[in-house]
Image (cartoon, rainbow, N blue to C red):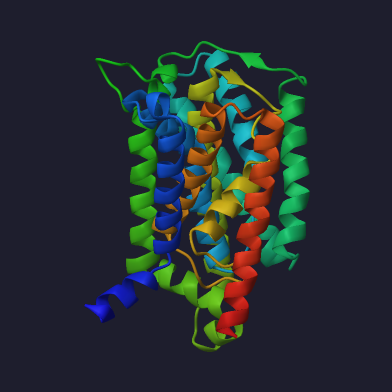
Length: 318
């Protein structure tokens, strides 16, 4: 029994799960009349979708020893391209394929800069963060783009009495399951962990490091493109200024979920719990009447704490 409990405590997702339960119970006690409503629970799930999808992609990138600061810009650019495509008469299916292709291309660009030009991931993605944001503003003429939703607005809608859980929630869950399977049961996943743990050793063992990096960055970009599609479904406009700071929330979710910025460590389940924890804290603060500026300070503090915990874990492992 003790061995089982000790093994459970060592799971990377246990700490974020425990924190999530504690925070949820705290706000449930403070505002039971509103926080415990079923509609509020579903709303929190809906609000977690975008950051969760991006964070899952970020988890794969961080586990393999990289970082991607451009995901927020990729999401914003995707919303603009989706709006432009719908304006041009493309249907939802073609539009989604274009958006996913764009996201994958942005991720491949990051991978090419890191692999081909040997630029450090932080610098490479810092550059593409600015460049992709600029492309989004240029395509949109620095303004929001209104477009006919053609039914895409229904994908993230809550319809009490008809469909309480939006399709986007199930899509995010499906993406997470696929990535978890990829990470745990495929050669690419095992190679990604090996590269993140020790790149030199991975090379000596015959792991194609360059191809692994390119594939992981492309997959991360693909997921950012998917998040952009669902962001458009939520906003129903193409917004080039959207998702600023999303990359920080995604990184925080990964680290809160047990991931390490040094690579080689992390999980999809823990990342999802980290993303949900951030949402519950924001929603709870709103329910107790905290001003937005205090919520922003709290979010920043959470990110700092998450990074500090990562440093403590790395010191303990050393």
